[in-house]
Length: 165
Image (cartoon, rainbow, N blue to C red; front, side, top):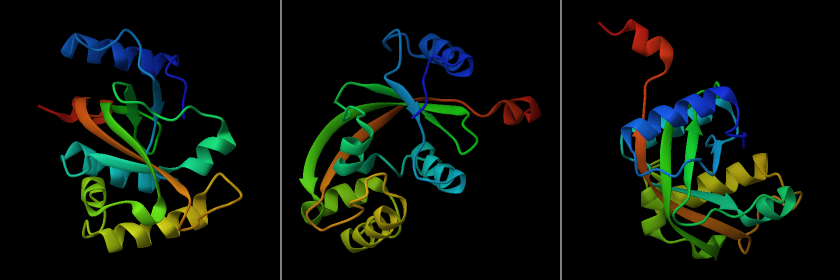
């Protein structure tokens, strides 16, 4: 997670406020999906094309880092793999369920793989075994924060804007 007080995030948020005046004065936070720059870019692309409208996080990771669990109505800046702000999302729903109880509707909302529950389970078990912030890693009973969101604002990176005719 990144502090949205950084100048680039502040400038991005001002542009978002101009486009979407009903946004709050400040975002909740700035963050990226995944654990690597490539993963962040791949998942961001799914958000930008409308495929990805949900995400899942380890409740154990939140316990380890001490970060607050997301809440419906919060707005976040989503950054790409280079840490550049690219989108604003609004969290619309948050549920905490055991890994084994995540449902197919949530798997579909995440937009990864073939969007099936089986693929979701395999992808996320592998992810938390490799990238968990908690030493507990992964377990079928681990708490999963299932978050749904909507895309509110996006802009192309500066290099893409300057290349446009």
